[in-house]
Length: 215
Image (cartoon, rainbow, N blue to C red; front, side, top):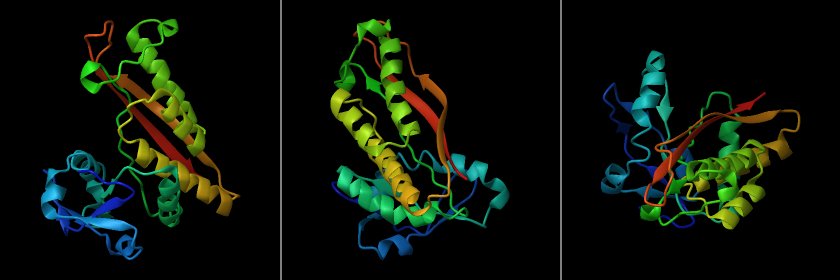
């Protein structure tokens, strides 16, 4: 689904998973006027959120029936729009009762992705990809939204969730201004590639997992 300048909300009542159904809430965000609503057909077509729900259900199994989810589809956003949503979401991230899950792959490399950046000084192709991803990950760990945007503009890295990540960085930027006594620590804990590429006929997708802690 194509979304320019907006984020979209699921307006369904619940999300079915193989384990149990998750209650959905969205009215609070809808009132801001900054979100569009997904039709049920579009909601069912969208797979990126769907893939996260069984995992969330499993991790929260001990709290079944005691929590709700707020599925949000992030569209194509300018840095200015990322900042708008960053301010909206900041009140929720600052509340320790809320937990954010930001979903994104990292580099999609290969001819079928129309992206074959290769810095030979890094070694094999897969090592170049890893170095490229790690540069972006370092900027995310530094919680630097403008530097992350510049990195994407310079290298064109095909990070599919670059805008959700950008929104997260803007949330932290806003909170740092308004919660100066709090510490924000972002750390990547895992990185992997679907395949180690050694020639231009191969392709791979990178994956990374990181954790943001506020204290």
